[in-house]
Length: 421
Image (cartoon, rainbow, N blue to C red; front, side):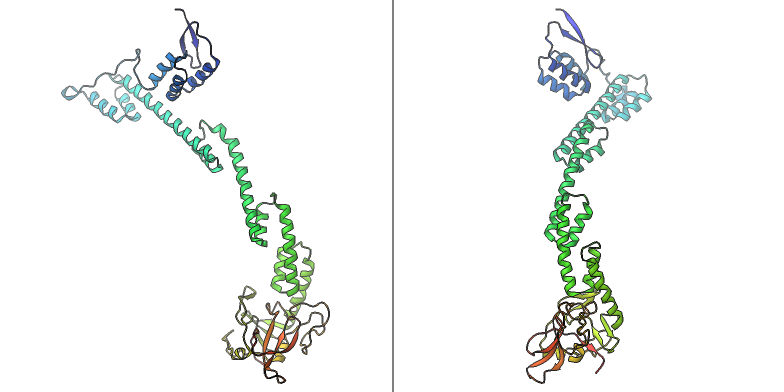
């Protein structure tokens, strides 16, 4: 039978019977397998093409990779034992048993012309191939896991572990797509969280994190709505804390000029009339009375009153005493003292009202210097009884500055004072 030679990629000549039909698919498969020169791939070829034209060569290479002795290889000499064993025999027996590349190398250095030189070289080559195959298997397994997870972390972990890995060329596009997807998902999560809370800080956190985010148009709508709501509160209460917070949050807002104007008026009133004692109390420089800045039940903290104010019946309010600001002589103010806190920003009357409500269509509410007394838009008891009605006592409603009587059994708030009288 005539034979022809076919030269393949590794430069080896393979005998192929003449008359065998060319199969481009098999040829391409074999070309890829022969380049890899991996036992598993040769076995895969034999499974796919059990009668293929490269079967003899595949089997020969597979035997060689698995360390089988071919006809051209010499059998390993038998090491002598017992009294006949030489130092070389003893060393070789130990080296072969341990089967480590460095020990085979030590044997070759000790016996460069020894009886087991060929066997040592074969075993070292086998260890190298096994190591390469183990590395390839680990590489493939790591890639399958990274590809399955599909996350940027998993893909980057593969690339860090195998910077020269067999699949490194596939990582780039997948990694970029994974990162883009994760950025979109993170932005969606941040926006949903901001929408769920619906407050300024949450929306600002989203805006800072995603200045060019997909939800920026909606963000501006939300902030405009919040700005209008916060300005309505700040304008109504004229609380210095609320006004300062407003100007900080909306430095370029639609109402910032008005807020700054009200703040300027409030600042002048503080310096003109009230001395801040730095302990939650102020002293009226005109009357010399010392006032608690918060209603009973609240605490002064971070330049405002925190907590819920407590309502008391009038008899209960008269019994209230407090050790506060190093003093224990705090008491209910008289109606004249309490009415003296009324401030009408309309100027009709401006302060120390005679009990009439503030005049004019526009004036700040509550009718008190709110940067000094932040929570005051309610009815507060005085210690003065109503001589015209035994069941009533006097108080002031700071919503409009009205001073009048109220049933002593009803609840009202309390602000204590000391000094005077």
